[in-house]
Image (cartoon, rainbow over all chains, first blue to last red; front, top):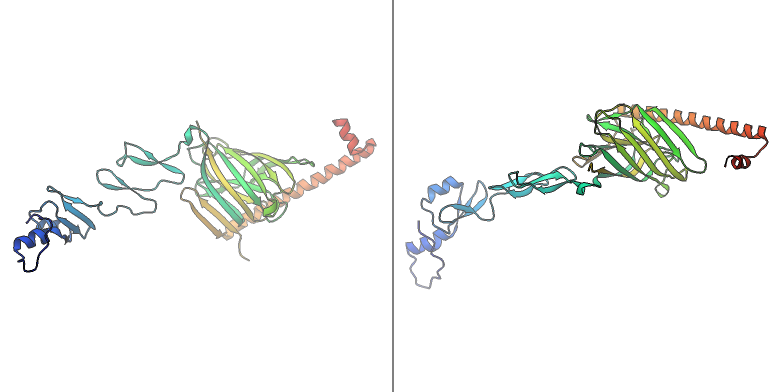
Length: 287
Length: 73
């Protein structure tokens, strides 16, 4: 094969020799082959600077003098939403992590990268998810509890039902998924002028806020903390402090679930009508 | 009549679904609403009975509610 000779500008009357055609043209165009094997068969003695295109991998390559090297990388290894284009000893795909994970350097992996749960700076709260719930009978937040955390803080905003006396309640969810609809014990109290409180005994759900009212402009809100949800040998416990829009006063409640198991999520519901609310979930770092 | 709607979020995948409850799910929901209504009715009846007993006691003592609060303050 002729080596590429660079550039020449032919003048009128010049004779195009075989050497010029090979050196200035054939060796300096992008040669198209079905695959690398076809190229090897066709170019038995490649010259530095030759360029080829392989149709099977969509790779454009130049000959370095000792090997064919991809220009701008070979075909993309990306296949799935969220994939990252990384490199090990060749171009490589790194699949997206799960929600809330962050990209972390890790020299033990092939690409030097991995998706991992954020350490949360060693302390404090880590955002897990936020849901906008609009006019539904029940709202299930599944897979919010993992072994990463033991305690979760749940912020409930702009919560209202279909009736002024609707109570906002919660049930625990577990793998299946299924809903724990028995064995809730606790107490809920309205600390308004006409103080009232009620027991929750062997109930199908635990009331978080009573009488949440029924309109967005007079909605209720609360902060709800729950722990022991991811531990099959402990009973989950929760406590809530919030604002009862219908009772015009602070509302406090607490409960425990008498059936210990590994719970993975929560179902929010009201005592009667549909629920509207914004709900954010945070995990509290263990250390 | 259509069943109620249910919202489901899978926080692991971010997938959100809003769908109509199955008949079985609706039956569970209806039973829970009935149970909650029964509990509330019981609580209201107890509150009314307590209020009546309190009023009767104040009358026997011959003092007003405000005077009773002063005594207990």
